[in-house]
Image 1 (cartoon, helix red, strand yellow):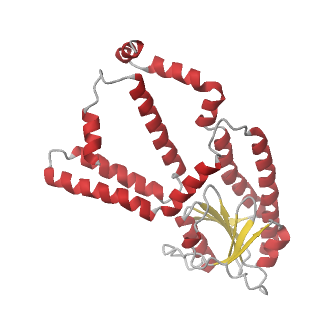
Image 2 (cartoon, one colour):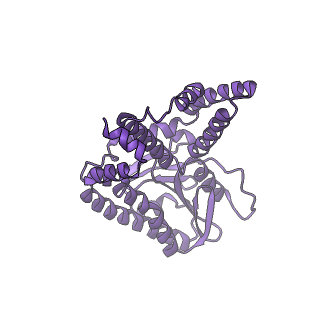
Image 3 (spheres, rainbow, N blue to C red):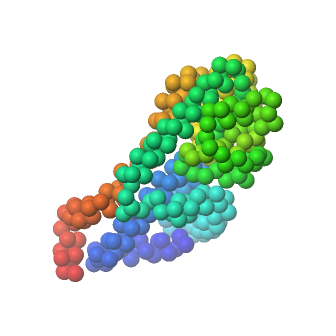
Length: 306
């Protein structure tokens, strides 16, 4: 694989630059950019950075045969291991492509208004429930899916599927100490409560003795997946928010609302105002003209002969 990349780089000459090749490069760079954007807040981002470093070392050690050979085998192993280690992320990407949400040619203004309205409704129901649970010092652990569906195999126990409408009363009822599901986590997205009584993986990096089981579980799941996790302490009633392995606390209900709105809304705004959307909204010709003007004169002369 590394040899193919090196041969491709060596074959690049000014004479080989054609319109088809430039389009090929543009599509390849666009695909790489989309993959990086999709994986920027997941474990895959770390692997991608490591893969790029190994590839750069491979290309730089052409004069060191043994090191070159070892890095070649490492690249092959990394490519194979990616599909095994990141099955959930790959499956989420394929589901995202299959739903067609990425297509810029689809009308999105109506869907955006409907999404924003639904988002505000479910967030308000959740905030009011968290506020009441905090006031009564009832422990709670709520995991909110964001861009990606959480693979149930990550959970220690997948809990009880609910697939129910999001309501303040239901969230409060689930975490009452008299119910069998109160000790686990509640998993939800913007459309429904998916499951309750879920046992989350614990974080091993938490050193503070002030953090209990719920806080460690919130940090643990946010380390492994792209999600937001709300925690209510049973001892103090304080509210916390975990994201990407970091815990923000203590929070008031208003602060929690502002954080959730800020962290959940940009994802949907970017989906509407992404370069792909603008490209499909009449900007293709303008982008092409700017690209041609930005090219060096020798390349423009080559393209003009096509």
